[in-house]
Amino acid sequence: MVKKIDYLIVGAGLFGSVFAHEMKKKGKTCLILDKRNHSGGNVFCENHEGINVHKYGAHIFHTNDKGIWDYVNSFVEFNRYTNSPIANYKGKLYNLPFNMNTFYQLWGVKTPEEAKNKISEQVKDLKITKPQNLEEQALSLVGKDIYEKLIKGYTEKQWGRKATDLPAFIIKRLPVRFTFDNNYFNDKYQGIPIGGYNILIEKLLEGIEVRLSTDYFADKDYWDSLAKKVVFTGKIDEFYRFKYGKLEYRSLDFKHEVLNQDNFQGNAVVNYTDKDIPYTRIIEHKHFEFGNQPKTIITKEYPSEWKEGSEPYYPVNDEKNSRTYLKYKKLAEKEDTVIFGGRLAEYKYYDMHQVIASALSKTKEL
Ligand code: FAD
Ligand code: UDP
Figure 1 (tube, protein in one colour):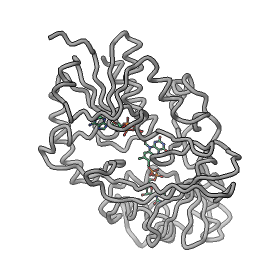
Figure 2 (spheres, protein in one colour; figure 1 turned 90 degrees about the vertical axis):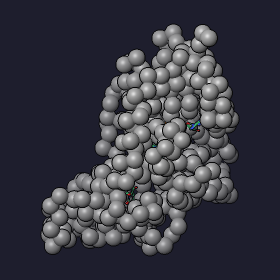
Figure 3 (cartoon, protein in one colour; figure 1 turned 60 degrees about the vertical axis):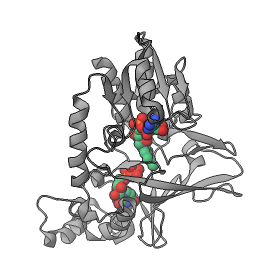
């Protein structure tokens, strides 16, 4: 049978959408499936009360790569939003990421030298030469006080694991600075699409057929029979029917609330770093786009272990899962007609710009 479609793409998230867009430009035919009832994957927004609600958690675009920044801006203009989350620990507020404002709030230190001395004092007895896990990495970067107040509780509820059992790289996502600078990212470019992420996805998917509410696995043989190649952006362990066991993911339960007030917390992101508060953060969506609507919408994020029926949001890149993933990766490398890409299929803690870069480089290779 002649296969009419060049690429059957499983997942209309950023990876699938960028891949389809680029291949269409090269004259290839693409069909996208998504089991959700909308495209966009985790960047999808829902408009309520005139506010774009980040349905699957706060998404702030940031990158150091001018090419990627120009690429996304060619579809939709981005605003000047700069992420500067606040941490609430037992009712006291601290600036994030860890910077001179945080050090002043914690210790009253006013100069970088005083702050560095304070951290060295807290680190010197620990004798950590090469940090082996998230706890050691955090302690050696910022000392005991910050670790205990702003990192340990948040991390252990977010990941459901002891900080000593988590990889060090997770905490290296956060800058530590000896300047009074509350920008959460070090990247040169940052913002939110004006009008929301759906515009970006709609533009990427213009002229491409997307079948929603369609689970690839419900009729895999049929879908495979239609296309020359499959681009898979779902869970790689599921693709191989969990042959080497299940990979672990963290999930989140989002509790959205509409409030009859115009401004609830004065900031888009407030993290609750105390272990006794069951959610990790409260997002107030209107602040991503400087909204002045009469009402506001907030979302509390409750982390949980992924189980059948919930959404797999974060790969857990600890040693055990990394070993299992490598076995799946070996199988994936042997496939001639299947391409694996994105956060779930590559089991990687990818940010949006990295997913876009990865999809662009895949399409260039082809
Ligand atoms: P996804 O968006 O997960 O898309 C995969 C799609 O595949 C989904 O729509 C899914 O329904 C579909 N699918 C899976 N299996 C099947 C199947 N069997 N059949 C049909 N369809 C299927 N990045 C940033 O840069 N900045 C941020 O601030 C940021 N915040 C984040 C906050 C949270 C809470 C989360 C979870 C992620 C965040 N990210 C952020 C990361 C960002 O969401 C990802 O990098 C990006 O969305 C991944 O795109 P993707 O296409 O790989 O995956
Ligand atoms: N983190 C923390 N305290 C905070 C914010 C972050 O300890 O107030 C740690 C935590 O381990 C988290 C990691 O830093 O998982 C990465 O944070 P980021 O904000 O990048 O997480 P994401 O937005 O991807 O959930």
